[in-house]
Every structure is written in C-alpha cells, then in structure tokens.
Length: 295
Ligand code: ADP
Image (cartoon, rainbow, N blue to C red; front, side):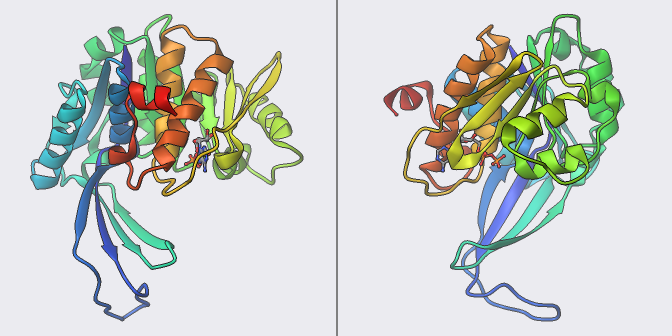
C-alpha cells in the first residue's frame, strides 16, 4: 500500500487579460476552485490507477477542506489520516493570462501545521505501507520525522518540491529522489554540469540510493550507483502540464512498492505523466489504469 505524506491545497484560479502590477486592480474571469497541493494530487493520481492509497495531511475546518476531502474520497483515497483544523486550508491564488503565464501566491495554512507529532500519531498508517511518498510543501521537520519512523523494509520516495537543501538523513533514505532540472539544481547547490546523466551522478554523490530525473517531453532518467537508463516519453499532444510530475511520482512510487524494477516502474510512470498532460487541470487530468492502457 502507498502512503502519501504531504500538502492539500485549494487552487483558486482567475483568468486575466493582464496580471496586475503593484497597487493595480484588474477584472478577471469567474473564480474556479480546484483541489490541489502536491500531496493530495499524488494520492488522487495513485488511487485513480487502482493503488490502495492513504494520505497523511492537514486541512482546515472550512469549505476548502471539505472540497479536498470530497475529491480524495471520490477517488478512493483513504482519508483517515487527513487531519482537520489548526489553520485554514492551504490555498494557492493563481492568476493566468492569455499566454498561459501565471502568478501564484501560496498560503500554506494547515499544511504548515502538519507536525512531527502528527507523524508519530500516524504510526499505524506508516506500518501498513510498503512505500511512503513525500514532497516539501509541509514542514521539513515533519518529513524528517517520517524518515526516522519509517518501518524496516518500507521504501521512501521524495520529490523535493519546492526544492531546498536537504539533511543527509533524508537524502540517504530516498529510493528514489525524484527531481526535475530546477529541483536538481537547488539540491546540488550550484550549476548543473553536463548531461542529465551527469546531474544524476552529482545527486547520487549526496547519498540517495537511487535518483530519477524527469525531463518533461524528453521523458526521464533512472540512475543508481550501477548506472543509468533513459526512459522515453510517450508522444502526446500536450494541453496542460500541471500535475504531470505529481502523476509521474505517484505512479512510480506505487509500482516500486509493488515490486516492479525501477526502469519498468519509470516507463509506466512516463505513460501516466503523458496521459496527465493531455487534459487541462491537475487532479481531473489524472488517468485511470484503463486510460493508461489505451494510450
Ligand atoms: P515536473 O512537472 O515535476 O517538472 P515533468 O514536466 O518532467 O515534471 O513531467 C513528469 C513526467 O511526465 C515526465 O518525466 C514525462 O514522463 C511526463 N511528461 C511531462 N510532460 C510531457 C509531455 N509534454 N509529453 C509526454 N510526456 C510528458
């Protein structure tokens, strides 16, 4: 079973002709409210594929929190670990202009109140999982506690987004560390030299057991100390890449937890990521197993 530990946000989206400058007011489209946040996105993506999935997260006791709980529940995610209260549900305020460029303000809200103590209280969820997947939209000390409490034999997968420097104990537990180019640059802590194979080597030197570099329409790269292998992208008409990384990570974590070889799991994840870019939105764009099959 897959346990996702991470964020749950309401994405509040308004289309505008032009994004406002300081002191300026512009009129926009009707407000659209979508369930989002990397943790909730991953949990929904995995559940939609048929994975037995639970989410450890925190939302507010408000309408946005209920929107998230409904979306998770409708997708079949076990929400017993979704804690309620402590702060308003996390929100991303998003304005999008006609060219698709956006400006985003995130209020972490309840995500910032998911504490190490909440992880300790969720011991039963941790013990019931073969693989735990985390991101960085929750406090780093909470991710550290997950790593410290990880049961023997349970795999830990991390997408360090938004990226920041990571403590050695977290890096050493990642199997794999999943990064795009931007995240790789921040984790390495300097310029990336050479090819993605070279980036993967630089990342492996920091301690993770394996590394996956996602390369958008170029696919991905899977690397361990033994070597690396490219995973081809599936050719699709890209409509909206929002959530592709979350769908890819969820699929990869689930397949690895089920015992698939890394290259095989990544090839499946690339199909899931490709399917997610063929539809607008994040959670609504995530495919079922049948849709992945049909691709
Ligand atoms: P992130 O959103 O974290 O930057 P990517 O954009 O690299 O992640 O997307 C994750 C994965 O989804 C890629 O490795 C690839 O397999 C798939 N993917 C993303 N964009 C496309 C695309 N335009 N065509 C086909 N596959 C894609």
